[in-house]
Amino acid sequence: MSSLDARELEAFLALAEELHFGRAGERMYLSQSRVSQLLRSLESKIGARLVERTSRRVRLTPLGEQLVAGLRPAFDTIVETIDEVRGVARGICGVLRIGFQGTANDQVMNAIALFQSRYPDCATEIVEMPYSDPFGPVHRREVDTAVVLMPVQESELVTDRVFSKQRQSLAVSSRHPFAKRDALDAEELAACSLIGVHGPAPEYWRRAQAPLVTPEGRPIPAGPTVSTLQEGLATVQADRGAMLLCYPTADYYGRRAVTFVPVTGLQDSFLALVWHRNHETARTRAFSQALAAVVEAAG
Image (cartoon, rainbow, N blue to C red; front, top):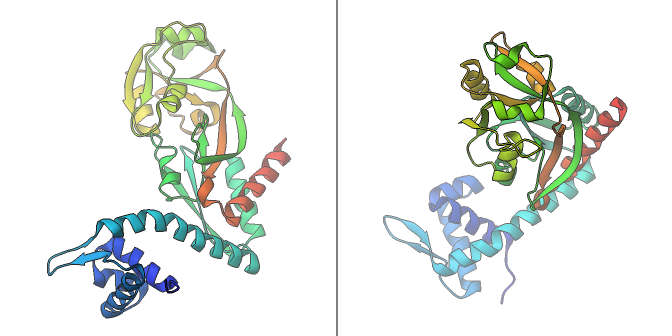
Protein backbone atom coordinates (compact mmCIF):
# COMPACT_ATOMS: atom_id res chain seq x y z
CA MET A 1 0.00 0.00 0.00
CA SER A 2 1.23 3.49 -0.83
CA SER A 3 2.38 5.50 2.15
CA LEU A 4 -0.37 7.45 3.86
CA ASP A 5 -0.31 11.23 3.96
CA ALA A 6 -1.05 12.98 7.27
CA ARG A 7 -2.99 15.67 5.42
CA GLU A 8 -5.26 13.01 3.93
CA LEU A 9 -5.96 11.56 7.36
CA GLU A 10 -6.60 15.03 8.81
CA ALA A 11 -9.02 15.87 5.99
CA PHE A 12 -10.86 12.59 6.46
CA LEU A 13 -11.23 13.10 10.22
CA ALA A 14 -12.44 16.68 9.72
CA LEU A 15 -14.98 15.46 7.17
CA ALA A 16 -16.08 12.66 9.52
CA GLU A 17 -16.88 15.26 12.19
CA GLU A 18 -18.44 17.91 9.96
CA LEU A 19 -20.13 15.64 7.38
CA HIS A 20 -19.83 18.62 5.06
CA PHE A 21 -17.01 19.21 2.57
CA GLY A 22 -17.22 22.99 2.81
CA ARG A 23 -17.03 23.12 6.62
CA ALA A 24 -14.24 20.53 6.66
CA GLY A 25 -12.33 22.73 4.22
CA GLU A 26 -12.87 25.82 6.36
CA ARG A 27 -11.44 24.01 9.38
CA MET A 28 -8.32 23.12 7.41
CA TYR A 29 -8.11 26.36 5.40
CA LEU A 30 -8.56 24.33 2.21
CA SER A 31 -10.98 24.54 -0.68
CA GLN A 32 -13.83 22.07 -0.91
CA SER A 33 -12.30 20.57 -4.04
CA ARG A 34 -8.98 20.04 -2.25
CA VAL A 35 -10.75 18.13 0.57
CA SER A 36 -12.42 15.96 -2.09
CA GLN A 37 -9.06 15.35 -3.73
CA LEU A 38 -7.44 14.30 -0.44
CA LEU A 39 -10.36 11.98 0.32
CA ARG A 40 -10.16 10.32 -3.11
CA SER A 41 -6.44 9.79 -2.64
CA LEU A 42 -6.99 8.17 0.77
CA GLU A 43 -9.78 5.96 -0.57
CA SER A 44 -7.51 4.89 -3.41
CA LYS A 45 -4.85 3.81 -0.93
CA ILE A 46 -7.41 2.04 1.30
CA GLY A 47 -9.07 0.38 -1.68
CA ALA A 48 -12.65 1.16 -0.71
CA ARG A 49 -15.16 4.00 -0.30
CA LEU A 50 -15.02 5.73 3.08
CA VAL A 51 -17.65 8.41 2.49
CA GLU A 52 -20.97 8.39 0.65
CA ARG A 53 -21.98 11.73 -0.82
CA THR A 54 -25.28 12.69 -2.42
CA SER A 55 -26.77 16.05 -3.31
CA ARG A 56 -28.45 16.11 0.09
CA ARG A 57 -26.07 14.56 2.59
CA VAL A 58 -22.63 13.24 3.41
CA ARG A 59 -22.22 10.17 5.56
CA LEU A 60 -19.56 7.62 6.43
CA THR A 61 -19.64 4.12 5.06
CA PRO A 62 -19.34 1.29 7.62
CA LEU A 63 -15.68 1.03 6.67
CA GLY A 64 -15.30 4.79 7.15
CA GLU A 65 -16.84 4.52 10.64
CA GLN A 66 -14.41 1.72 11.47
CA LEU A 67 -11.48 3.81 10.30
CA VAL A 68 -12.56 6.83 12.37
CA ALA A 69 -12.95 4.69 15.51
CA GLY A 70 -9.43 3.34 15.19
CA LEU A 71 -7.77 6.41 13.77
CA ARG A 72 -9.05 9.22 15.99
CA PRO A 73 -7.35 8.20 19.29
CA ALA A 74 -4.05 7.49 17.53
CA PHE A 75 -4.15 10.71 15.53
CA ASP A 76 -4.95 12.76 18.65
CA THR A 77 -2.04 11.13 20.46
CA ILE A 78 0.32 12.01 17.61
CA VAL A 79 -0.84 15.64 17.58
CA GLU A 80 -0.54 15.93 21.36
CA THR A 81 2.92 14.36 21.32
CA ILE A 82 4.12 16.76 18.64
CA ASP A 83 2.65 19.72 20.55
CA GLU A 84 4.31 18.52 23.74
CA VAL A 85 7.72 18.04 22.11
CA ARG A 86 7.40 21.43 20.44
CA GLY A 87 6.49 22.93 23.80
CA VAL A 88 9.54 21.38 25.46
CA ALA A 89 11.73 22.68 22.66
CA ARG A 90 10.34 26.18 23.04
CA GLY A 91 9.64 26.03 26.73
CA ILE A 92 6.13 25.44 28.13
CA CYS A 93 3.70 27.41 25.97
CA GLY A 94 0.17 27.34 24.61
CA VAL A 95 -2.89 27.31 26.86
CA LEU A 96 -3.58 25.33 30.04
CA ARG A 97 -7.26 25.02 30.98
CA ILE A 98 -7.72 24.41 34.70
CA GLY A 99 -11.12 23.33 36.01
CA PHE A 100 -12.37 23.72 39.55
CA GLN A 101 -15.52 22.98 41.55
CA GLY A 102 -17.20 25.53 43.77
CA THR A 103 -14.26 27.75 44.65
CA ALA A 104 -10.66 27.93 43.54
CA ASN A 105 -8.98 28.09 46.96
CA ASP A 106 -5.84 30.03 47.85
CA GLN A 107 -3.52 27.09 47.19
CA VAL A 108 -4.91 26.63 43.67
CA MET A 109 -4.74 30.34 42.89
CA ASN A 110 -1.20 30.56 44.26
CA ALA A 111 -0.22 27.56 42.14
CA ILE A 112 -1.64 29.28 39.06
CA ALA A 113 0.34 32.42 39.87
CA LEU A 114 3.52 30.37 40.36
CA PHE A 115 2.93 28.46 37.11
CA GLN A 116 2.46 31.71 35.19
CA SER A 117 5.62 33.19 36.67
CA ARG A 118 7.58 30.09 35.67
CA TYR A 119 6.06 29.81 32.19
CA PRO A 120 5.04 33.27 30.97
CA ASP A 121 4.54 31.95 27.42
CA CYS A 122 1.75 29.63 28.58
CA ALA A 123 -1.66 31.21 29.18
CA THR A 124 -4.01 29.78 31.80
CA GLU A 125 -7.78 29.61 31.60
CA ILE A 126 -9.73 29.00 34.81
CA VAL A 127 -12.96 27.11 34.17
CA GLU A 128 -15.72 26.59 36.75
CA MET A 129 -17.14 23.07 36.44
CA PRO A 130 -20.64 21.96 37.43
CA TYR A 131 -20.79 20.66 40.99
CA SER A 132 -22.83 17.73 39.68
CA ASP A 133 -20.29 16.76 37.00
CA PRO A 134 -16.81 16.69 38.56
CA PHE A 135 -15.15 14.43 35.98
CA GLY A 136 -17.11 15.05 32.77
CA PRO A 137 -15.18 18.16 31.65
CA VAL A 138 -11.90 16.22 31.95
CA HIS A 139 -13.26 13.25 29.99
CA ARG A 140 -14.69 15.58 27.33
CA ARG A 141 -11.41 17.53 27.14
CA GLU A 142 -13.11 20.79 28.07
CA VAL A 143 -10.29 21.25 30.59
CA ASP A 144 -6.74 19.89 30.65
CA THR A 145 -6.61 19.33 34.39
CA ALA A 146 -9.06 19.86 37.23
CA VAL A 147 -9.24 20.31 40.98
CA VAL A 148 -12.07 18.13 42.26
CA LEU A 149 -13.50 16.90 45.53
CA MET A 150 -12.40 13.44 46.57
CA PRO A 151 -13.05 10.56 46.21
CA VAL A 152 -11.83 9.79 42.68
CA GLN A 153 -12.19 6.21 41.44
CA GLU A 154 -12.12 6.87 37.68
CA SER A 155 -9.74 4.42 36.04
CA GLU A 156 -9.04 6.80 33.13
CA LEU A 157 -8.01 9.68 35.39
CA VAL A 158 -4.65 10.28 37.00
CA THR A 159 -5.08 11.40 40.61
CA ASP A 160 -1.79 13.20 40.83
CA ARG A 161 -2.02 15.43 43.87
CA VAL A 162 -4.25 15.11 46.97
CA PHE A 163 -4.26 18.17 49.19
CA SER A 164 -6.31 20.65 51.23
CA LYS A 165 -7.38 18.47 54.13
CA GLN A 166 -10.40 20.17 55.70
CA ARG A 167 -13.01 19.43 58.30
CA GLN A 168 -16.62 19.19 57.18
CA SER A 169 -19.45 21.50 58.16
CA LEU A 170 -23.20 21.20 57.94
CA ALA A 171 -25.00 24.07 56.24
CA VAL A 172 -28.42 24.63 57.82
CA SER A 173 -31.02 27.35 57.72
CA SER A 174 -30.72 29.91 60.50
CA ARG A 175 -34.16 28.66 61.59
CA HIS A 176 -32.97 25.06 61.95
CA PRO A 177 -32.49 23.72 65.52
CA PHE A 178 -28.86 22.86 64.72
CA ALA A 179 -28.11 26.52 63.88
CA LYS A 180 -27.57 27.33 67.57
CA ARG A 181 -25.07 24.52 68.08
CA ASP A 182 -21.29 25.04 68.22
CA ALA A 183 -20.65 21.58 66.76
CA LEU A 184 -22.41 18.36 65.83
CA ASP A 185 -21.54 14.70 66.06
CA ALA A 186 -21.83 12.75 62.83
CA GLU A 187 -24.49 10.50 64.38
CA GLU A 188 -26.78 13.52 64.71
CA LEU A 189 -27.03 13.70 60.91
CA ALA A 190 -29.75 11.05 61.27
CA ALA A 191 -32.00 13.83 62.54
CA CYS A 192 -31.83 15.95 59.37
CA SER A 193 -32.43 15.55 55.63
CA LEU A 194 -29.23 15.80 53.63
CA ILE A 195 -29.34 17.60 50.30
CA GLY A 196 -27.85 15.40 47.60
CA VAL A 197 -26.41 15.84 44.11
CA HIS A 198 -28.16 14.88 40.90
CA GLY A 199 -26.62 14.72 37.47
CA PRO A 200 -23.84 12.74 35.78
CA ALA A 201 -21.57 12.45 38.84
CA PRO A 202 -20.94 8.76 39.65
CA GLU A 203 -22.92 7.21 42.47
CA TYR A 204 -19.92 6.69 44.77
CA TRP A 205 -19.02 10.39 44.53
CA ARG A 206 -22.57 11.57 45.17
CA ARG A 207 -22.83 9.30 48.21
CA ALA A 208 -19.57 10.68 49.60
CA GLN A 209 -21.05 14.20 49.49
CA ALA A 210 -24.41 13.11 50.94
CA PRO A 211 -24.07 9.78 52.79
CA LEU A 212 -27.11 7.59 53.37
CA VAL A 213 -26.00 6.40 56.81
CA THR A 214 -23.96 7.72 59.72
CA PRO A 215 -20.58 6.13 60.59
CA GLU A 216 -22.42 3.80 62.99
CA GLY A 217 -25.02 2.84 60.40
CA ARG A 218 -27.99 5.01 61.37
CA PRO A 219 -30.07 6.00 58.30
CA ILE A 220 -29.79 9.63 57.18
CA PRO A 221 -32.97 10.92 55.48
CA ALA A 222 -32.43 11.93 51.86
CA GLY A 223 -33.39 15.49 51.07
CA PRO A 224 -33.81 17.29 47.74
CA THR A 225 -31.11 16.96 45.10
CA VAL A 226 -29.34 19.86 43.36
CA SER A 227 -26.84 20.32 40.54
CA THR A 228 -24.96 23.42 41.77
CA LEU A 229 -23.69 24.73 45.09
CA GLN A 230 -25.82 27.84 44.72
CA GLU A 231 -28.94 25.67 44.29
CA GLY A 232 -27.92 23.72 47.36
CA LEU A 233 -27.46 26.79 49.52
CA ALA A 234 -30.75 28.26 48.31
CA THR A 235 -32.43 24.98 49.28
CA VAL A 236 -30.76 25.17 52.69
CA GLN A 237 -31.87 28.77 53.09
CA ALA A 238 -35.46 27.68 52.37
CA ASP A 239 -35.06 25.18 55.24
CA ARG A 240 -35.74 22.21 52.96
CA GLY A 241 -32.66 20.29 54.06
CA ALA A 242 -29.02 20.51 55.18
CA MET A 243 -25.83 20.20 53.14
CA LEU A 244 -22.35 18.92 53.96
CA LEU A 245 -19.53 21.20 52.80
CA CYS A 246 -15.84 21.50 53.58
CA TYR A 247 -15.06 24.44 55.85
CA PRO A 248 -13.40 26.78 53.26
CA THR A 249 -16.34 26.37 50.89
CA ALA A 250 -18.75 27.01 53.71
CA ASP A 251 -16.77 30.10 54.72
CA TYR A 252 -16.63 31.38 51.13
CA TYR A 253 -20.35 30.94 50.49
CA GLY A 254 -21.39 32.18 53.92
CA ARG A 255 -24.67 34.07 53.91
CA ARG A 256 -26.81 35.61 56.63
CA ALA A 257 -29.68 33.11 56.43
CA VAL A 258 -27.40 30.03 56.45
CA THR A 259 -25.36 28.77 59.39
CA PHE A 260 -22.38 26.42 59.06
CA VAL A 261 -21.88 24.05 61.99
CA PRO A 262 -18.69 21.92 62.26
CA VAL A 263 -19.31 18.14 62.25
CA THR A 264 -17.07 15.77 64.17
CA GLY A 265 -16.79 12.07 63.44
CA LEU A 266 -16.72 12.38 59.65
CA GLN A 267 -13.75 11.84 57.41
CA ASP A 268 -12.04 15.06 56.43
CA SER A 269 -12.58 16.35 52.92
CA PHE A 270 -9.72 16.51 50.40
CA LEU A 271 -9.17 18.00 46.98
CA ALA A 272 -7.35 16.24 44.17
CA LEU A 273 -5.67 17.41 40.99
CA VAL A 274 -6.65 15.08 38.15
CA TRP A 275 -6.22 14.75 34.40
CA HIS A 276 -6.99 12.13 31.77
CA ARG A 277 -4.18 9.62 31.51
CA ASN A 278 -4.39 9.65 27.70
CA HIS A 279 -4.08 13.44 27.49
CA GLU A 280 -1.18 14.15 29.83
CA THR A 281 1.09 16.94 28.59
CA ALA A 282 4.14 18.87 29.72
CA ARG A 283 1.76 21.66 30.74
CA THR A 284 -0.28 19.47 33.09
CA ARG A 285 2.87 18.06 34.69
CA ALA A 286 4.33 21.54 35.09
CA PHE A 287 1.16 22.77 36.82
CA SER A 288 1.19 19.75 39.11
CA GLN A 289 4.76 20.66 40.10
CA ALA A 290 3.71 24.25 40.79
CA LEU A 291 0.83 23.04 42.98
CA ALA A 292 3.17 20.65 44.84
CA ALA A 293 5.54 23.53 45.56
CA VAL A 294 2.69 25.68 46.94
CA VAL A 295 1.29 22.86 49.08
CA GLU A 296 4.74 22.01 50.45
CA ALA A 297 5.43 25.66 51.26
CA ALA A 298 2.14 25.89 53.15
CA GLY A 299 3.19 22.95 55.30
